[in-house]
Image 1: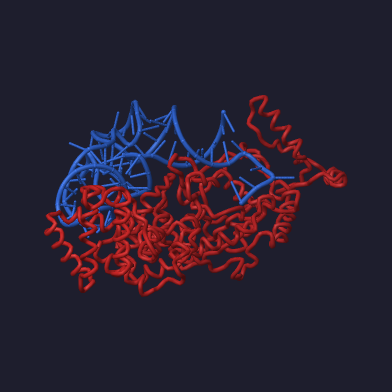
Image 2 (image 1 turned 60 degrees about the vertical axis):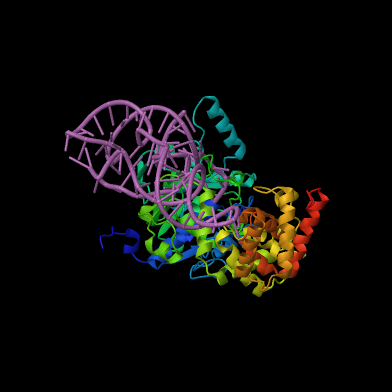
Length: 509
RNA sequence: GCCCCGUUAGUGUAGUGGCCCAACACGUCUCCCUUUCAAGGAGAAGAUCACCGGUUCGAAUCCGGUACGGGGUACCA
């Protein structure tokens, strides 16, 4: 097979990591990064590591870690090593690895790659203001480089906050290869000495992730393209510590419809929200995989296995993609249709059984739901569902004690109130006596009835449908009638007639 | 401001110098099927391949510039 060589699978066993910062819900963009991490690891027979980067104590959200894991689990992105499952490189939470960062910082200090800096935040701010005032680019001026140990001690004694900064060469070009972008160059002259250890004793992202990635034998760093500009810093740290940097794979951003970085204001942006809206995890998985990557041909609907098999980091796109929820919806429908009836039922149960307030069936419907009844209903709505949640709507009237049809809807379309009333009267009589009460027979009888009334099937069936289901849009009428049962159908049709009469559209008109 | 990345129909992608006056999918529209809604089937519309210039017999594909979009420029990640 003339397949192009795949660098990632050549050195089998990529170790990838997803390293979210627990500051909030897991964003769909983050999910996609995690997905690519997972795909590469699974494709190459390597490991996928979950690491929590909680070095920002100000933005730390204790709930976030739980919800991030829940998102990954929902999507089936299982990790081989992580804070909860442990692993050979534990711990996997940065706040528990502070010793490592302190050791590394000391090494960098000792080797002269880094220095302690007592510049205060106020001074920094003042510096930037001054630079801006003169029209110069704001940035640190490396003023702390030549502090003597004595000066630092003095500052420390005075209670000033001390940070550690990495020394950046004054000139020179740093080149690195990115799997997605190719060769990228940066000019050191444009980079200032940056903080690697904050005054609160926590490392910055730059330092911490480099150490962890090295300690954990990470081979591929897959992350959003917003990290490209700071990659030179990371390489600098690797070099100073005498380590070889990993392979960098900077993936394009996901944008909202307005082409700006996807965020909350673009609607549901967290993975769990898609779950709650009735999306299948395999649909989100499939859709996200294709947002920024393609297998190279027209294949769109793919199983998890096929995606793993065909994935390659070399085919990750360079340009950002707009998140098209319409297409996700379509794909969700396709995958729902691919489910077996039993499988769909299993997925539907928890959705329908949720409390009404959370989007489930009305609380008046008894839980647990009658599985045998549901089993009969699933085929009626199966190919009509685009989301699991739609089943609440399209199946609700099967479970409800009564439906309250809209008077207008009872006689809409090709019908009129008088005809609707007449149709319902005739239908009621038929429904009371017809035997057997089964779809095929019901249909035959109703068609005969239409003929004897000199009506087209439509104008006869529509009022009945609305009376029975409460909506002009519903599953096939006679399957529906049979499933609901004679008693309740008769009751609903009778109610609809009353409703019409109450609104002055008696059969006599 | 400076730096970095990007730019094929509304959207996601295919295309890596001739097979491309550009293909597939979503969406849109029309028709068929049909008791409604879907699903399914058959079609249609929609792209000066961001723009300008260059290389070449030949460019969506290579080079340069410009424009536009996004990202970065923190003791946030």
